[in-house]
Image (tube, rainbow, N blue to C red; front, side, top):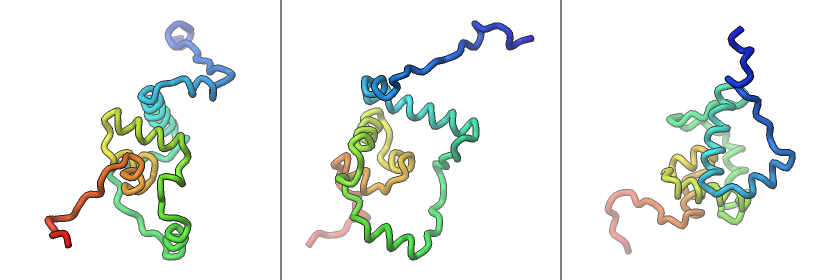
Length: 127
């Protein structure tokens, strides 16, 4: 029996106060934990895989209008924890576009949280 050795795969127990323990993690540690938990959940089939090179999907017009009318997507609409994760991901070396895909946000929202200027398309003269 290859699985009979308990030292080979020790059982991991989570603390009873997991939320308090998570509050003590550094931002970079939290980003690493999040990335690894997502990867493991995808591997087990608990969560749909996040396709990093996915083509934009067609959105029904009614759904698009509802999103547009809700808000402009300002950072004030984001929970503080998500904004902190975005900043930690950026400081850990992730690109804003990858962060936007990971959190399923628009790049403009991520850029507003990071306070980055929007990309200009081409060399358009300013008026």
